[in-house]
Amino acid sequence: MSQSSRMVYKITVLGDGGVGKTALTVQFTMSSFVETYDPTIEDCYRKQWVVDDQPCLLEVLDTAGQEEYTALRDQWIRDGEGFLVVYSIAARSTFDRVEKIVERVMLVKDEASLSATDNLYGRPSPRQRVRTPIVIVGNKRDQGNDREVSVEEGRALATQLGCDFFETSARLNQNVEPAFKQLVRSIKIAKRGPEAAAPPAAPTQPKKKHRKCIVL
Figure 1 (cartoon, rainbow, N blue to C red):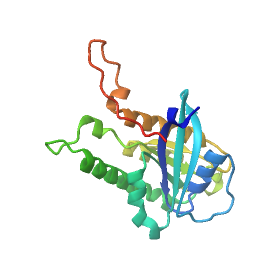
Figure 2: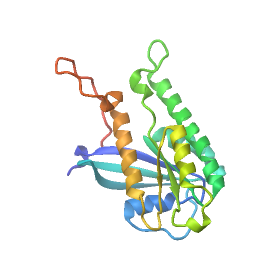
Figure 3: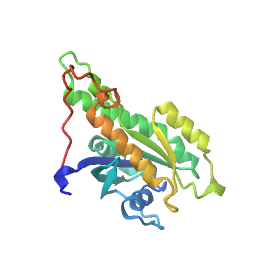
Figure 4: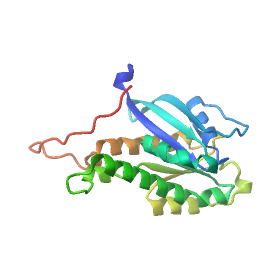
């Protein structure tokens, strides 16, 4: 399969330091578990995958969670199409940061969308109002004895913020692929616009133009 026939999806992994962002990314892209914690600044991984019978190429950006790199975060957000926002179920402080991270993603993506494609009246078109794809991930579910955040709390926050939710274990490779797969599906809808989720139009209706997708 040539690269030109594959859809490209740009995924950015966000969250506080030590929550397992690198471990999740490496488990997903390389099917291995990173045991030691080595703080990341920015690493990009690629994976060829098939989602719903469609070949795709994922570019997964693993980012820093340390406070000293927050200046880079807005650029990571602008470059991404979909986001995994990760916390550790064994560290409530990382869960408490999730809402602020999600709000920042929405703010930066809204600003980028409006500045690039405002219509003549300064209002976003319906296509622009497609919600930025975000999946909230509670990682380290294998550390159940150290749990500080319940499944119900994680799911309730995700529902409140309008995001999908998974609890994962990078160590045991639990729910890692399903979390990424749901994010790819959400990005696919966002790329096509709201009409992708709507019933097909009657044959007499003119077809709506789809946004062109980035290919390598």
